[in-house]
Length: 232
Ligand SMILES: C[S@@+](CC[C@H](N)C(=O)[O-])C[C@H]1O[C@@H](n2cnc3c(N)ncnc32)[C@H](O)[C@@H]1O
Image (cartoon, rainbow, N blue to C red; front, top):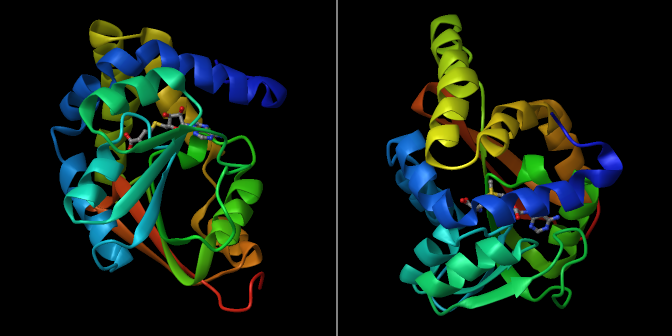
């Protein structure tokens, strides 16, 4: 089901192109709309002032970027999928750019903040992506990464497994594309464990790494600050 490493970038792009039209609908149904409050929390965690420049990395159809722009931030959204960017462009007149998170078309030190929603496990080389994040952020710039997570409590973990591994693929199949929504739970294997992710962030040049969970641990928000002296 999961693509071979060398094919992941192309396979992920093609998959998001395929599901772009119904992506927002499936997201709202799957999370019962809870993702909206997680996105608000991610934007608030940046702690930035209006008119400061932020990137929505792997912006997809633009939910995080639109939330950040509503708060007065100047946002650029970058994504590999032309299909997802097409939907984003119809939703809001922001700067939507087709590009790879591992080679951002942005000037070094040009941003105050970076947001990313549920994109980490889709990247082919997370270390390279985090190094790019460090490059384009100015020293002291903030990072806020939303991702799925697995609850610690055994009871919640069991319920979550049934939901994520059975209901989500069924729901995704009924509303959109069964293979894509089978990939979604399977792609969790690409997510590094907490300590490993902290290490990757620190090696890329981030400090003050912190994690916050939502809804008993079904989603997580990782925050960090770009260290003043570059790579740790
Ligand atoms: C699960 S979607 C998340 C979309 C959006 N951020 C959200 O919160 O709903 C993951 C997105 O990451 C994008 N993506 C995957 N690999 C990428 C890469 N290397 N560079 C830029 N975008 C990428 C996909 O095209 C897709 O739109």
